[in-house]
Length: 367
Ligand SMILES: [Zn+2]
Image (cartoon, rainbow, N blue to C red; front, top):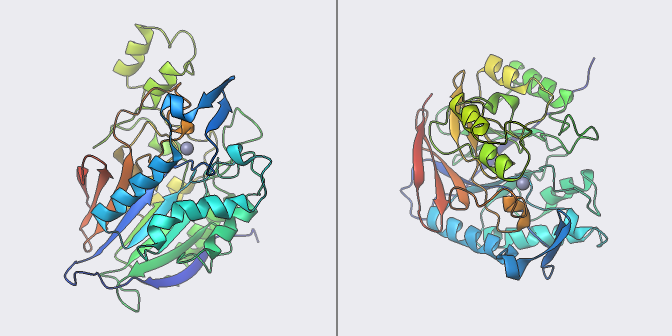
């Protein structure tokens, strides 16, 4: 029998809300922080040395944004959706640097006693002194709700009660969406077959505890994110690729690039060229209301395909990878955090929290 890779780690009881009358629960996502090790303010990329101070990049500002978001949105849980660390600037450093940088990111979360979890992106172990397997040790840091997980692919219910319930618990599914592929044509290795099988088997097992809704989190968008019209937010990847010289001739020249946009062929995403089949599995099982990814810093949309909301989280980084070391141009929106608010069975809301607005692009995710 083929192996599976999906752990059910049970139920996580969240603390009672401080004000006593808050209904439901709130998740703050942080994605693509590309947090830099303290003191390093240069990055060699694209054939040049980037000076953070001269070009306006700052790793400290990532943390300031987190402080702001946590203060304004008072989440019950934080989910980090990959590229939180970036291995490249840590090359040649001790492997312990991993925990040190992660603890910098966790500081605003831990000082508020907020539980959290994490999944890796393609850069968390990119050229790093630690391995992808080492990233699992992050789950052993304080207040991590995934402490029992021995794989990135796992599921749990969260709720206020001691037991999971069909009315007020939310099921989270966390996935490793893969690393940079050794074959550049494929781009990323995508979800493992074992995780897709594991998700399906567990969903069909009848052993899962009840929940009101299911949400999936991973880093790299699925191929099914392509060719969708945003219900809210932006798909900014084509514009960024055009600026960054990644769109091939002749589509990189106007009026060809305009034509691409008119035809809607600009609704591209930075997915793997492999299709793991996870979307089809979600569709078939019908237990996922919405999925949340990061990766394409210039995109932040919510769209829908086959009754599943496909969402991007808002990029929260101020370090050079945030705008592809300048090549992608500035993001078309303020850096921030996607907040998810569950208020009951058909009451799931999402919005973005930024320095300027507490709730931008408020959207109701209906069953
Ligand atoms: Zn990223």
